[in-house]
Length: 111
Image 1: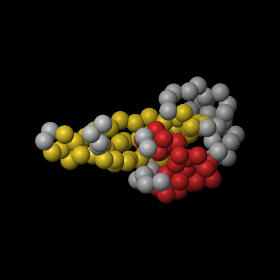
Image 2: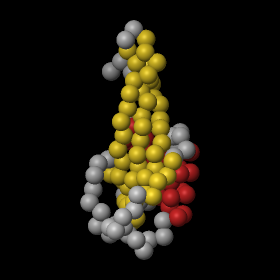
Image 3: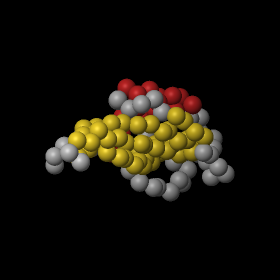
Image 4: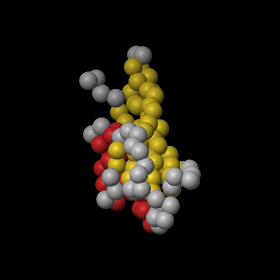
């Protein structure tokens, strides 16, 4: 399972659309994610693991009550093997914007 598939599968039970790239907020409730990674546990100049640093962004209209969705999201991420996320309120005058930051480590295969 790719990291994209794993992130999408983790939040699927919220029934909120999730996209692996930037999307314009237009009064909808949706997730967008991005990540960066680095190799770890090198042997023979080859990483044995890939460590992912992930951001999942939740966008909602101002009037939307997002408390239970945010709590559910944290539970689902943790239940699917990710680290417990740090949550930041990045809201502005265009609506709610919540950022969940978490990590994952996977084994590297020989392709």
